[in-house]
Length: 304
Image 1 (cartoon, one colour):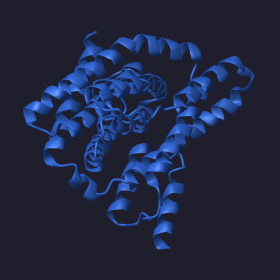
Image 2 (cartoon, rainbow, N blue to C red):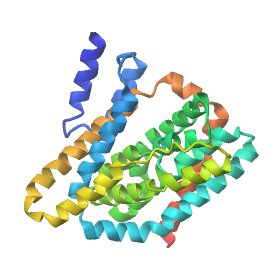
Image 3 (spheres, rainbow, N blue to C red):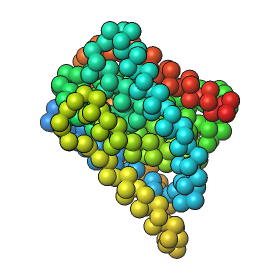
């Protein structure tokens, strides 16, 4: 009973504007470490649902023409980063002598959208539960670091809102952490990052199909992120019916705060056991791959 009361109170606290994404993540991790997260809660299920609803809500605050411009401008960077990350991951795995399936899952998560990409690719390559858990744990840890580090680096380098949003969308794994870091940086960064990240997430489908061919799997179970279609519909609806702008602004604000709660739930699912389970080689692999894509993307944006 005590666990539920503390957990619910902390979750409700995350709905207040003074709680940031980073604070919510730390709060969730602290509760998990202290054993104050109820064991019967399906955190992964609720996190995915809340994230999907929140992303759709953000669509009501995005201008259609602006979304089109961001997506078209970033298409080359998206394709290049995905191909380069997967190729680098395969080479690095051989160098570190890391097990192929685990390294491929981490590479897919780094290349596209973290846990969602891992969940989509895993059945296509017949990954085992332990391999999936190791890949997810590695990605979740790096997501947590990115949430704190990226805004600090962005301010230190005096990146403008659009540049930071683009960098976050390409270099941070999960959509939730991308949105969390971008929202902490500014509203324009949030809009740019969300739009570009969701465009990137659409590549889950072709990557999962290619993965099935590479690993010679007959599986056709591919998880398609349908909420992206509803997100696009929200953008189109707000553009077609501008007379309801006040309602759109309210939904957009609610969605941003719901994402803070989403980060709290993610933090609550990260335990010390999962951190240990990520393994030394897998973590080193994930860090090197992440640093490579982060630095290369930043260099591209600053010098391009």
